[in-house]
Length: 358
Image (tube, rainbow, N blue to C red):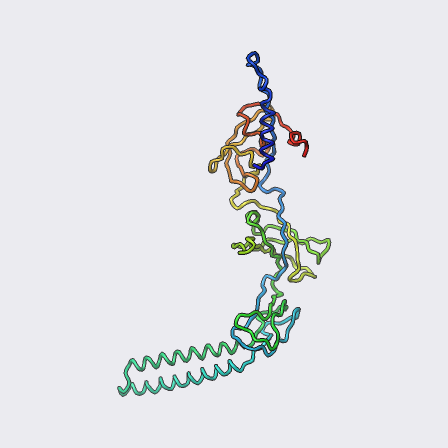
């Protein structure tokens, strides 16, 4: 309980028992004053709660293109914002080195095959051992693998667009030496939907569900709000931030581009452990929680008394507790609940009257 909550609770206890302070022997049978308490109404888990997060728009399929082999870029004919088609050659490496490796691999393969054929004929007359033949066959297989690898590298001397799209970023220049895997271009597949990727804290991620609607606003569309849906929930927190990213799929809208900043407001759906029927209460209302069982104090409106009630306890969610087994119209005692007994008269007070309205 926060420090202010302790002060309120102690104040309520003092108000509730103040009538006992002046009791003497002659007033032993004087009635006990009603204890002052605060009450709240039940509410559905996370009802009305909204999670707000900011992130950047991007295409669902965005890729970083790079060469598989090292080399010098001899041509790079696209730039940021250019539209490209599937199969289009975007950049090339100087082919001298890969062509040389391919020719050498071809020569090694031809020689290995000739030797294999020659040893096979000698084996028929018994001049070559079986072990020698097997060794030469293995050498021919190795030469074939080397040739296939060199041919594959030759194909990677050209960078080809895997799909139609738009160039998001150009990270290299013609004449530059690049290493295998070094980013050269970033490409977005324009046929894929736009998504908003936002980070959420570990406290909020449990309140988001796939398919939950989100209201999206961004400066590029002033005065407008888009309705998206949560399409992906990350399973790993960022090493630096500790945040978990989610994706919100957006409807097609002219003027939207990858990289634009947008804000999402998502209706919280409750923690993953919450089941139908649970309601939300301030944590201070819970008494004697033990596993899936706890007790609370309800207010009997007719008699203005406290009634001790057993409930199913669904755990804590931040400053709130989740309970089940209480009527939806119930009023629950919060501050002061630990200082009243079952059946004791109580008096509902405004908490601001105990702290001067501050």
